[in-house]
Image 1 (cartoon, rainbow, N blue to C red):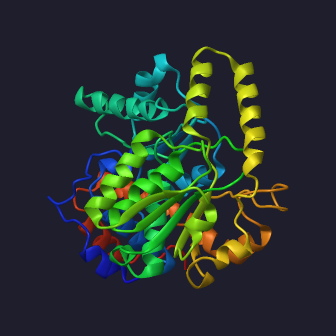
Image 2 (tube, rainbow, N blue to C red):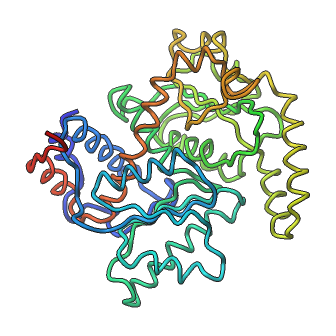
Image 3 (cartoon, one colour):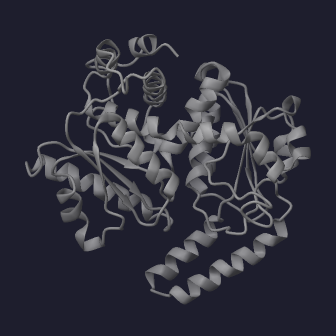
Length: 391
């Protein structure tokens, strides 16, 4: 990628709608804003690949808040922030309801970014992240902090904007631009996992995003493995506006047929997540354990929802691009039976790891757009300065 050409296409002063904003859900962003963040990620990656420093900040911190460890996203956040020159502080805990305003503000005194990951509780996790964003906004308006840090949703009950925009940029690079994604068939399918309790953020997030770019989207899941009701409505409306399509089928085979991109991923059904949230609110931890055990046992009915070499052969020319947010549950490697076979994983591992490697650049791009009034000038200055990362 020619980063100077990319920089010339980025928003200039007065055109950056993301300045001062946080990144909570992709459907709160315009198509142009999504494409700008994705392009910015590509430009940052190109700078680093060419041994040029994308350092933007001379000082400042970035604070991560994970309710539970997600090593991949935690490392991605730290890497993306360090790329821009920020020092990382990991709070490594969830904020209590009574402490959200105070702690979020104290974490923001000299912070340029807050990365928050909370995905356990349906229809509550996103509200928790928004409360953090609202708290620092209020503190900025009241003069308590001089600058509002950019709040990034690193994974919630609804969406995972870093992951899905990273996937969009990765697909765009593979197919020659976001405009070339139009008309491509993408299969988003439930896949078996012995864990079986993952949030809906990634499948809902990618479904909500790719339907905006004219893709022909097929969602496959066994009976009962439903997403949040709004996700289907949003996908239908997006597909109608973009000229793409959205359909739902009940078999992985049908979804994979002639698909050019496939996304096999396990998720817990919406009804289960609702029930788990209710039990948690009632402090019934033992019942949550029983509920999760019951789900795992029920999931065994669908153990054949696994991506095999034969399944990949059903895709277009047998060469579909395989996407996954990683880590994947791989049969005979990480579990006895999982989302994909060891052969499929081995054949696609380099691509999957490259896909995951886009996340730090998306995080850095989001922060840069939130903090720079003129992203184009910021990128051009980096390219013009041409500071080598190492000699």
